[in-house]
Image (cartoon, rainbow, N blue to C red):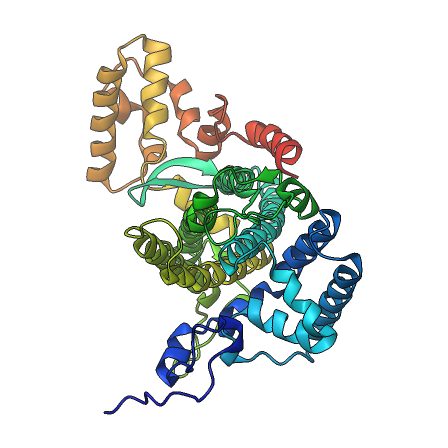
Length: 468
């Protein structure tokens, strides 16, 4: 196979006079980023408008030229949003595409816009703005998911189901309590979003290529115009930092992991072996050969997105790990992982909102499962401690013998007779029999953070106050 190394006769005019020949076709392909960084168009123009207004205020460019630049940028924004703008790969990236079109609209005055800045600080600014906008939207969607979970938790605050450890039946819990566990996880995800937003909310604009600029710019003005808290403090760090993008990918990976765990539970709960829930046709698919199938594809795809999102995090981490200060073209690889992660995670969040609102709980199947598997064994041990004053370890041993007796008889604990239990521990009375129901077990867990319906009702109120 041969590689096309034919060079165009003219160099890219935006590169300056140092280049007298254009790039090879392969160079054009590997070097261009407009195919994906055009997503930054709004943020790029937002930054350029702030920069232009600062240049006017500082009398670095004439007011007339500045006014023409601002009007031209607003026209470019309108053309892009109306789908009339033609993106050109030969112009490499969103910055040059916008500037080239600006030149077509207002002429040579467009060249003054790039005074006292570089594409290095420009792209760092654009990406920070884009990530900030995405974090705000992501936070609103996670809040919507919390709202859906809280609503279903209220509906099922007394619905009994088995709680699991090692995917083995452990103790009875309430479905409302189970759903609220994910509300707490998502609350921490939202706190990570807020933390990330605080750290990234500094403006790199004005750092120029790497060393700052000799022009009398006002970086505090441009930072304020773009809604940043302050300008970044070090010009070298400004253009070479991408830890805000890594932090975004990290928090997205943790959030995706939480969604994946819940998606896995929905898959399990919807299976024939559990029958805890039913998902409607809106979030399931059929089989091309087995007409009886209802596959929980939406949940499975949410689960699968986690690998993709975590992979994006590792990809950018590996890009950045060996880069000396300051900017290297490697950093062009920062955008696709960020864009793909945002798209994938938001899709997963929206799918999860839909499934939470959609599923129908099979209360009978849940209750039956919660009543099996000797799930109230701990309640026997607790009763022995409270009523006989025995050490818990001894009560644990006694309960284990009672469970073994039930296993030998192939029955549940509440199917044993009082005499059979007394054969293991003579101090057991008929009062103990009332603790053997799944309902009583769940209702008795009133410690703070416990699963009782009474607690769930209180937790729902607090969750609404904290998160909605």
